[in-house]
Length: 424
Image (tube, rainbow, N blue to C red; front, side, top):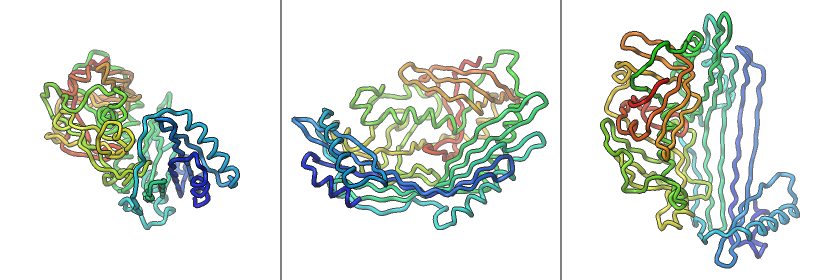
């Protein structure tokens, strides 16, 4: 890195620069059925350099990748090429973040433990929970990772952070008399709770068994729809990331601070805060790719848009204080226990092809691959159906569980009951 900085400083065309390094150590296990097939250790590092060139009344930038095999002459040539490309970019001027140093670790109960030990524990827990008389875990991959992010720039930024995580990919499988069906499970965690993981896998094995016998409904269904965290993160993530400074600058966001997201709320009012880190989320960070310190920001409060968020460049364009590119969407829980939400007749969408949320067309819906219809007495597995609704109506009539959970970049209600869907 010292050589790269020296070459950047020697080039008179470079007005500013940024170097971003991502280093990852991992220990990986690959299982087929119950058999461990492959063990792999990796140690990788990706380094990118961005140069900034001021020309006339504009600022341009260009990024290139540094490889271990690059010689000083190679690097000098890459810098010169990047300068030529940056001179073709005509952005409004902006300053880079400046004068900040940090060396920190994100909290995790994985820190200090041997990666091989963690991977073995996870493998045993998943496989033990994944047995069925008619199936099991067809394939399992476990990735234990330590990731180090280091950013430096020409304005005095020098920040480094370390995060620990474990990622799990599993294929629960049900073997029926005529065919086999599978589901796909992915978990990405910074806090490992083996009992909770085992419970989740046992639940998925019940779901894959249900999918094996699920049928299309023989008559129309009209009831509220229950969504869990896997789909709620798509819904609330769409609402939250519409609040970015870039979208506000480009006029691509539908609502602005002061506008009502929920125009006539009949259920829970939505509050969303973008956060830097939350216990259990592997996406936690203290700074973004530019080195801007992350500052939590409530973007929606009680159903009303109250703020935007984002990085340094577009904050400057809008005359706002930068919050940094906050990675985690946290939604306040509601007033109703999840058990009460499940007590009324509903359609629980367990697996979807992907919940589609479009604020501009006022649409929410998607294809449902596995659902449970609770008629007040029985819980009936269904497949081959779709749901659709007006997003504005759904948002005005949703009830959020008081229990919350963390899933990837989402921290919020574990379940929600939504009204107004067509089920077909």
